[in-house]
Length: 210
Image (cartoon, rainbow, N blue to C red; front, side, top):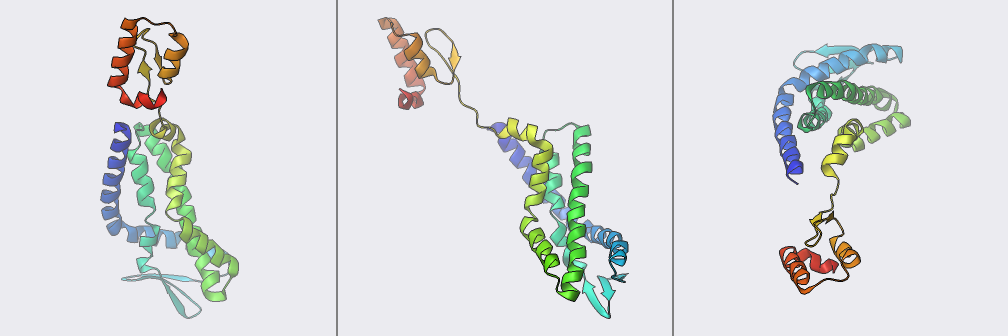
């Protein structure tokens, strides 16, 4: 339980810190995303122009697609990085996990941005489907990627562990201690019976297993 609470506390702390940082650097991430998408849009037949000043926008066919506040839609990078930093990995594995996960999230952002053009200008149904899926899974994706890359840590930290008890008679440890006592100590004297009684008083939850 302690390990779980430490992880949750670290995750919340890193998330808060990183989100504050993202408010300031998210604009530059969005500019980079738009710059990467520009040649791809050209290849798809969209002769766009990227304009960066106080606003961040694409111009195409005499209209503008303003992106300025869209960086807040891409903040799912924040929980992913917070999850990785909160996970008890060594430095090399943290770097490796980020190098795999961040490009995947970037690819989702890229697809989402590009899909807006056929939807916005031509009402393309498939593009609308991609954008809807992106909106629905936006906060799920960082957790799925983290799980895929950190499953060994997750299984170790969050698995439900059955409590073990030490037999008051033979000192053997078992998760099914009452069944062990019944099967292994069928003939017991008064002193051993008193030991079992004191044992059950110490662990009252065992009364329900009797």
